[in-house]
Length: 637
Image (cartoon, rainbow, N blue to C red; front, side, top):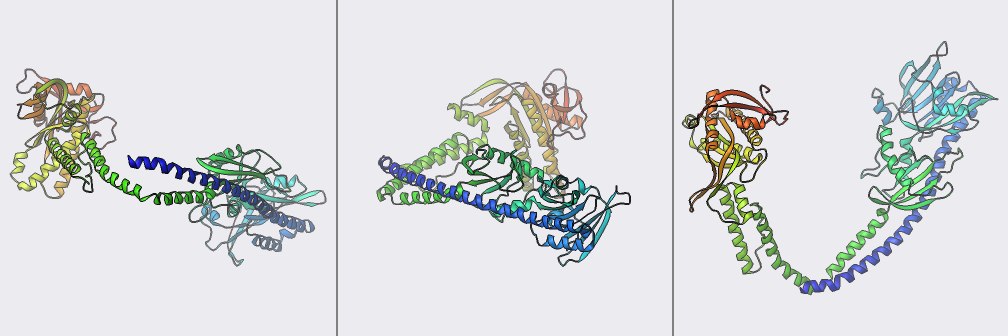
């Protein structure tokens, strides 16, 4: 009580101080974040402008050269000049010159993406020079490709017909209808297969369009460029157009550097477009100014900024930056947590002493309550209280609970667990009494057990018998049955008591199949070890019997009695007559016929009962994929 009063007076004050300090720090961090995002936007915008400006200047210069000498790039010297220009611009994916007659010459970078799509590429190749020439009639285009190493030496040449026309590429089509440099939407490079953004400059002679000079940059390279200019380690940067479509997807950070965009770029774009679209809906669509908003995306708080990208090509591209606020506020959260722990440490010594004493006394009581709760649930693996109780009275209670747990564990080994659990739940003493219930009753027996027992040592026989009983009890328990008793090498079990089960016959059949199949596996192992094998026979009946506590007031047994039990026992022996393993009565078969595959064995009569009745052999469960239940060499019925 003293501890509660002290905590009620001191802790709220400390919490109030910590929360106020934390909120003020978050406000300051948000201001810094907004400033950094704005400054980062401006820097990235300038970098993107420079990124494309270099490509624009390159194609403009090459276009001017082609206009002065229209045949220059058709000569070997032109191809070498084109390669030299390309090698000086590391951010380009390809550089080419294409003419209206279909002639085209250029250079493409051979990177990891190229090697993945073209595994036959020479290992030392750094570039691919290509030359496309029209056929004799001008309709067929042929291509000649040469792989070039870092020193400029051609190491392999390939030639053949071209599967596409470079004059049909989007960048060439745009250049044909323009008087100035154009930039295409993202497209797939016909050679490398990568997604690229192409810059093209038209080549004119007077009013005649001769061709175009094109340079392409891989989207992966542009995404990497944006990643390196991020504001914080977890910032996502993307380029989107005015239709909320991702032009350049963001790269996300990882422990060993940026992740790569998926080889299937379409899948990668689909994964990020929904997220980017969600972000764009949260900011104002303002074409002339920077917009900054705070929103939750994917369960995480982000600061979002959207700004137009300045360009001279009238492209409707915008820069979207999403920065997790935890990148700024996270350190404040850790500092606040540290401050909270520091304040807890300096709480008065009296609180620590009271807390220590109270916890030491209550720990034992709580532990005993947990153990009693587990014992009530018949969980005999409840952990011990651990440390020795602080007082003698608590120690005596703990010893009493241990004794109770041990007694109930022993009791449950002689009495079916369901009966023990029902006794505890009803909180009634054991007493004589039975009730009539419809049960599925199973009897098992080992074939020629007496003969086998004479040929092996007692210890080996006990080990094998224990393995078999473990299989039997495990299968019965797995199908929610009750193991009633062990009768020598036989086992009696039933379903439907003490708890009622709606599908008792089917569960009994499944348990029988599991027993026979698993003992077959045991026999395989024993045969390899040179041990004797044992075959099990199972009989199952479904009938109304008397079940309950039978015996005397001094000694009780929870079991089932009646004609139905006797029939189940006789059915087990009937297996000898038909050389079968699982024999069931027609009462069982009628209940499970739509679920099992069975074989009719004929009419039988059993000792002590007038008349005959049909019996069946259970072969498996229909459409079951469980190896213990699936039919084996069965006849469907």
